[in-house]
Length: 109
Image (tube, rainbow, N blue to C red; front, side, top):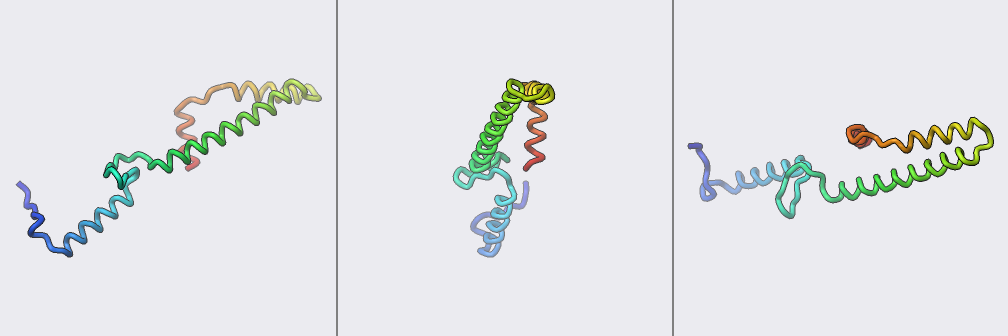
């Protein structure tokens, strides 16, 4: 059995030290939710919203590049422009592996 102090034997100073240590741990622990007390290392809701907004901006940028590539392919003035449009379209139509996408996300953060 461990030597554990009971609530009735702890001093106010020791209790303050425990609360300070708890606050420090909460500040360090990713994903700690002050409302529910969970600290399961998940990002807070704000981080999810930031990731969603970032993903939406990335999708919009890809749509713009796809449009430009299509225009080059369909209406390029030279064979080179049409070839660049075709190659860009081919690359953009390929799906990135999930592992590569996750690695990219971690590098940008």
